[in-house]
Image 1 (cartoon, helix red, strand yellow):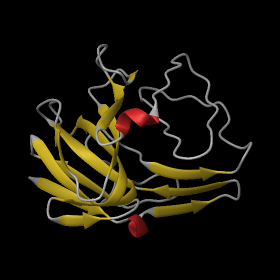
Image 2 (cartoon, rainbow, N blue to C red):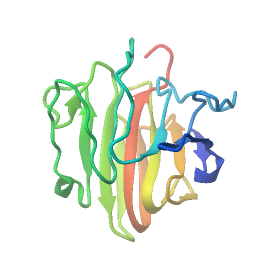
Image 3 (cartoon, helix red, strand yellow):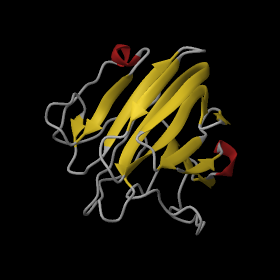
Length: 187
């Protein structure tokens, strides 16, 4: 097993007035050669955007962009239209992104699965990696968890590869984002 812990206060910072951003991996003016990616996952930004502001239309070539509003509202133009009720993630992981037609999440053209989950203090859970060669990046959105004998708090993240199943315990009421992505170059 290989794991890399990213504490919330170790992320890159960018302030633009209308946008306050925290970068998990090297992005824009923030560059850390030790934090370029986790497998095929290149960007995890935590953005606070001022009301009625945002990003102008711009191209993205050969990549999938997933925006997950945690508070407020997001206006985004695309052809997907999916709505996923938050009530379906109480005490369990709700699939929000998937390449599989039979899953509930928004479809993407990558071997990547994203899940959101809300868990109560003291509850223990497991996550099973979707395919060989994948790993999981787990981001604590709110609250706290114990995972791989580490304590993680709000906005801490951990990259884990080389396991089929990942066990975690909510040490405080929490909300998690799990991103299951290819980490093996051959995958």
